[in-house]
Image (cartoon, rainbow, N blue to C red; front, top):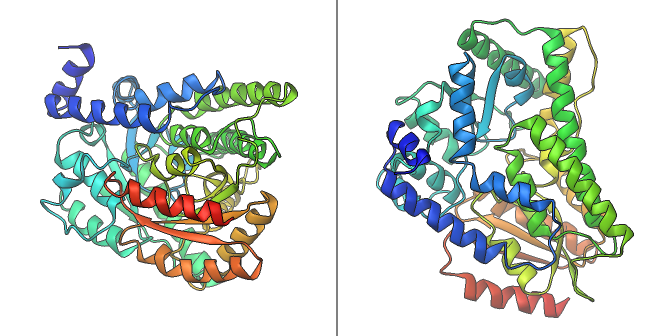
Length: 422
């Protein structure tokens, strides 16, 4: 038994099943990501982050807890990580993007519900998630009905905190959200026995802004006529941000951006001549899920923009960096996170405007609306998005799918026909 397998066994995981999960994920990564030629050399670090998510990263979390720190699991980009980091709490995204764990969730939950929720819960139910035994608290949010009802179930099993995300963005809703941010702060203060201080919060804001600036710089390379990296590799980098140490990630990302600058100077591009520039909009593609990007780029397209929570929504809108006034800092954090344009809001004119802005900015030939099965928010909002894009002369294709590979042949046929039409 290896060192990591002994660790997994000590955490109460099913070691044989976890080995099968690791092999499944590695095979998917090889098939859907590593087929690419001429990848930037600095991508090796981010590949390793994906592979070490259940091994080396878990060791770091254990060491953090042994030193007196706390660890929380999150499920959404609405959780203000600055507050957690300022209190010595490690936040880490728990969302699963693998079909491997879905059957274990379906023993408890309905089959006709969100694949992301089923994959995430299935990892815990199958005893293949090393984070579940280490969590001091889980943080959910009310962005969809599937999650809200799932939190009701999980709240009976573990220390769970739910943040209420309002459904509108009026001043009254902003006031409600600010109260939710304060309640999150107080819950973490109770968890750690510490009180949030302005200086530590300022440091955390600067660190996460550094990460956001690095991601914004990374995505700016996709705006070039000859991008030096693929949409697939950009996705891998963003997925790594959800689990890696924030400062180490920021340093490694800056190194990658330097690598990309050199590639641009040498005229190195990953795009085939005449490749159609595509924007993906809609649901996120969390770690373990590279399906749609792989289908598009292996069919000859180039994904140049992701209007998703694993794309622009994750890094847009910095938190103003101001020292001293704790209340002002907390209000600035609340304001920044409420700007995130999820399909849970209604009306959602801001998101429609953002989709059109990004389509113009990245000069896309077409848009693919990515909808996870049973995600009613993005599925229904796709009607307005398609109409708005059509008015601007931008064709769009809606792909509704899950994490399985059974429909890839059918999807490839549809995607190839869409690209041919462009």
